[in-house]
Image 1 (tube, rainbow, N blue to C red):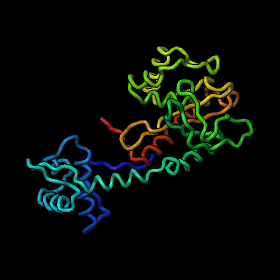
Image 2: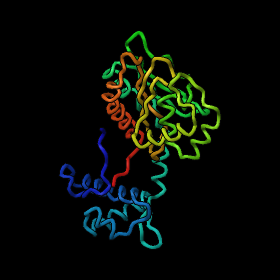
Image 3: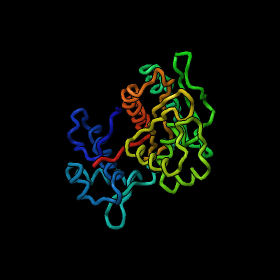
Image 4: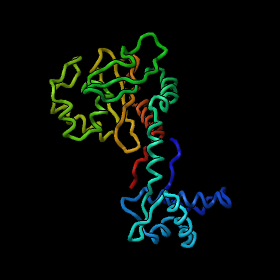
Length: 270
């Protein structure tokens, strides 16, 4: 998995940084702490959590405030400044899901030998926005730009599971089409199934959308933590057994975690 920053790190412990570079590392550590907090932080909090000496912290905070990276509020607490908003917006405008995901999708297809799709929620359906196909002649029929139902696809179930109960009800207000004998068409049963998908972290399409096709899908989170898209690994059921699902589900989760990280997602930890 891609490396993650540690907002609570002792910035002074970075032995690779010297001089002004060490000051930069310490300043970033202070900004990380402010960004990770639900409320503005006092100087004493920042000193305690960063391990930076108080005089150094005061000097760095003054520089960061004058640069509008941080701002000092009336009660001498520190919050993010307006410059960060501009940086964040510029980053978000340059995010291209397909660009960030393409090499990782190819890695998953090479590892598994099967077809990989990325889909998003659009007009109450799954819209496929990226795909890398299996080298095998027999493979799933979906293509980039095509749409599939939410309730019967692995990607669709992941997208639904990432919504609130009220949002799920709204998205499932139409009769649920029976695509195959395995399709879940009872709304109550599907809602209970979505809770399982949410808790487990991935969904399985057990030949529910296309005859003879099985898949496993997992969520892609954006910078806010929302489920922005989902990725599936799909193949004909005769060569994609339940044992294969158990073997490849962790790889699908590994790839979606890496894509999410590239999109700015940082999962919270206890």
